[in-house]
Image 1 (spheres, rainbow, N blue to C red):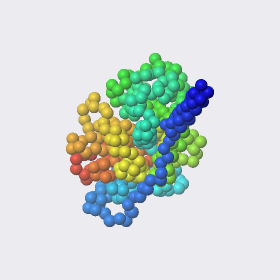
Image 2 (image 1 turned 90 degrees about the vertical axis):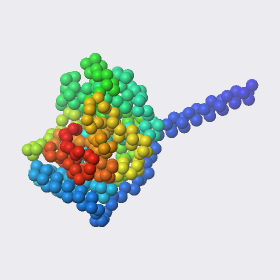
Image 3 (image 1 turned 180 degrees about the vertical axis):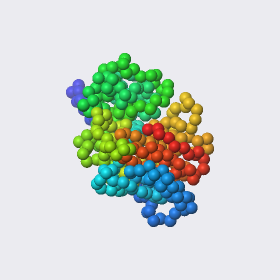
Image 4 (image 1 turned 30 degrees about the horizontal axis):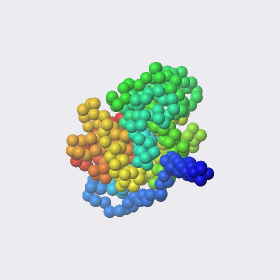
Length: 389
């Protein structure tokens, strides 16, 4: 009997240790080794296509950006090689240091590409399922039919916090946080009741504020720390970071078209939907990592880049964190635009032609959104401009 009891005690102890190790491995974050991202040297030999792309970039820069008093940076790359790169204007549009390759711009909604891929990295690592209900991770979330996939694809039906926060009585003298947004949804389920989940596409910043909280819940890390560990540091994106209010005086300010500085306001503390800063060269590293499969499996990228919303006919669609132009030719433009305060941004990728177009500005300029026209040298796209955030 004593031996039997001893056996049971040892079995229970072993099971507890095994469970603890397994549980730890389930929620530990796989460390990403440094990934070598080496853009081709600027002086590398240009192909005939490279030359045509450079000429197209120069034409857009001179005829659209410079004529519209552009303040910012543009970089166009093909096969990891910079074919065109320009920095114009001042960090303070009226005085101060010139913008250069180390100047980090607010990406606005281009930030969503990082948030989405961070979630997909957790999915790839078996730390969550895309069709898990949001309430499984965010305690008290009152809408059980909404899944992580719905948030990623903007098919949750949730209302946009940018529009409802003040209507719910939020004091605009206080910074709103991601947790505050969640609590508003929990406290006002009838007033903020969403449409039917997965019924239609409705672009909504609330989705990505909640996704940032899910990332923090699963990883036990701050959103900024997780992105630093999994993307920025391994990829050598040394000028990229997540903004916090404490950085307000040190980051690049933004301006209206009339040179008036945009002040901070109560929505500026929310992250996931915005608030990532980066440079064109860092964004080129992001493009290379995605294009060359250096950090994601082919299965994960396929999931991210397929369209989820076909309620309306046409070529425009949305994947998981990416806007899409899906041409009948089979070619795709995988992109995101951004617009927050005076910052507006374009990050467009043409995988079939190994081309990335990056335009970042801190003084509002509508011409930035015409950057896709640069790729008009390639067949099969029917290039157009847009102002979709």
